[in-house]
Image (cartoon, rainbow, N blue to C red; front, side, top):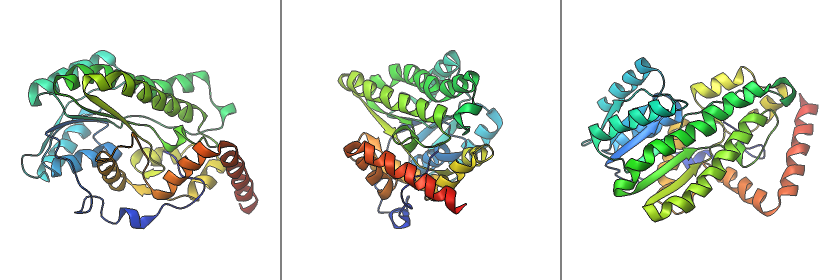
Length: 292
């Protein structure tokens, strides 16, 4: 994930992400990729608590099965969760898992893809193999999910959400391959919105900052010093907060859902004055380096 380099997140905005102030849509059936942990797990938990039947997908069967059992144990109403092992990088495997989920639950009304990877390092330390691995997980994986889910989504119409990153909108030191993959994913979602709207499919993209997840802990193992400095200056959200903001955002019309008020302001500023954002970001990096 990626922290807003300009300001701290506003903690008041996320006081109760699953509480009465966040209107959860009662999606009858939902699919969540990357549903065994992190943001995907939190989204699946919120949906099941709201009464949705949720199919969760991830690579490792054992953690996935355990997550499904725990989510079902805390589900509300008719809510439940069932595991469907699949690696988003395997197009045929994803298609087979989607077919199985559709046969079990019926066609989805909501598909949320949270699968991906980040291994921050300086550009000169990365190889083309690193780039290809990141593109396979973040961009090709989203492509595979889209193609596998689309035949089922168009049966009754629904919503497709891919998880990109604030890094896909505002690049930062140490995320060259990751930012490129997420910017590509945002562009893919923009095209899909145009092509799929006539078919009754609403496409959205989630662009979170740094989020306290197992994936974020993995990122910290390889972060350059400069990236750690920038990351440490921003707010760290929880997966539950991001899931709450996503479900709240789906009630509105914005197709790019950016958790956190200050993060949304940064994105708007980037759209209005990209040169100014670039200067501010580089100046903050220099200032943090002097303080270290």
